Length: 287
Image 1 (cartoon, rainbow, N blue to C red):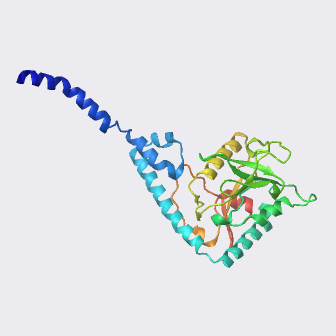
Image 2 (cartoon, helix red, strand yellow):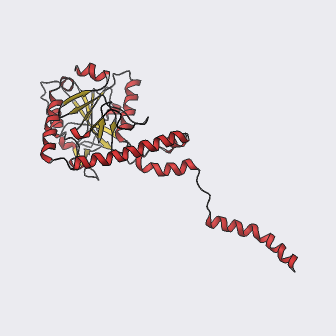
Image 3 (spheres, rainbow, N blue to C red):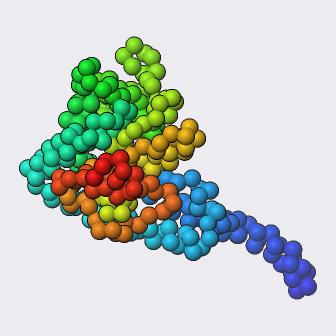
């Protein structure tokens, strides 16, 4: 009888273990995929970007993202505590500096962000109105502004001729409709046969080496990389990348961590003036 019972146990044991394992211990994902799922909410980068990395690279990237999150929190607090009257003064000073600059006046085709007061971005309303109201007797200018396409860092830049071309999106941020008032598709800067001269960019923080800290979505970095590649393929001069910044947003050189997905800027415009960074900025801004 004992022998018979032992035989039954030997027969049942594999089946019981298999059922127990299936119910309580599902096969874990490989390490790199669990790492991807942890990181995606912060950067929304394609999973292949992480899967191909070594452990040292992923560790360095993780450190960079952590540093960026801490710095974002710090800068947001500084912007929130900024006196409204000081912010207004700096908005006015920054826009006036840009509008009076020769490099701005000579630019024919520009891409610029539409400022959002809730995000405490440097105001661009006066600057955009100035571009759109340029008299026909002056040098004609084209203005392209951003439209977010999805949650995967995809953004487009559409041509507008009036601030009335803008509508509020789901986050109450103004952006152009994909079609004009006549139902015709708007001109997409990525499909234009003419190069962009100047990009006016936002950001949370900048350092004196041109590193830009965005809000973590990767929209501008993704778009700029695509446009720079297009300019290279077309043998165009690369556009000048100029960021607008409040005084409290400027960090010391090297203060912002950078990955190979980040695009640095050529120059900063603060209330104190223009800060050229790259050789292209020094040459084209004639500073």
